[in-house]
Amino acid sequence: MPATLLSTHRIEPKGRAQYCVIGLHGLGANGHDLVPAVTELQLPSAHAIRFIFPHAPQQAVTINGGLLMPAWYDIRSYDLTTHEDSAGLALSCAQIEQLIAHQVEQGILPQHIVLLGFSQGGALALHTALHSHYPLGAVAGLSSYLPFANSLTPTARTELPIFLAHGLFDPIVPVTLAQNALRCLQSAGFKPTWETFPMAHTLCGAQLIKLGAWLKKSLTILKA
Image (cartoon, rainbow, N blue to C red; front, top):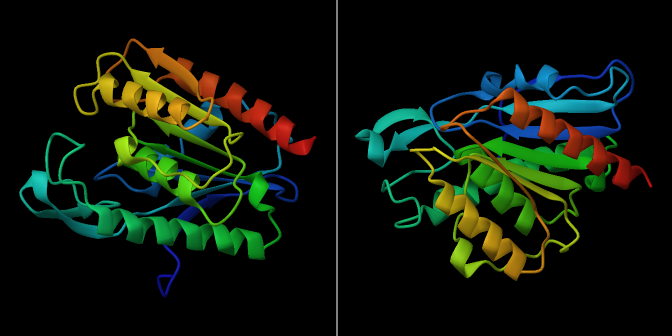
């Protein structure tokens, strides 16, 4: 495990937190990037969810000329399925596992922890949830893809709720990559929720409303 926890931005519920959503930003952004989305989820005002938005460390990114920027792992090719950075992905996965462990130490059940992410953050969220040492509650990937999808060997239970949402006109992460992730997950026995929207590589209100409804449903299942 990494020596220190990632720096994060946190949003606490009005009452005692019983659930935790860890939201992972995309390449070149930071933890504050997803904060405005929280209000668009249209969650009940009395929800008991703690939101944690970690900041990715600075590192050189090959496709951006080796410039230093916040990144969960290196992107070496515009074809995201070739030359994947397995070492960088493993390190970031360990860092997210450490955040999960910290929440468990604070009294949040692993089954009440949800990972979600946008773009590269979504890829990390999916990869971590599928291989976590903890039985997580749910995972969502927005405008994202599944690293090493064609050699998928998940350890998570197939009942894990998974939400995939993508723009039909995404020029950064083509919708075909998300569709391949969907097929690979289904072949492995998972039953993801799949949504598409007439948008590019971004978030939209309709998508976040759908995500909020799925999140409420997933947390209701977890309460049972």
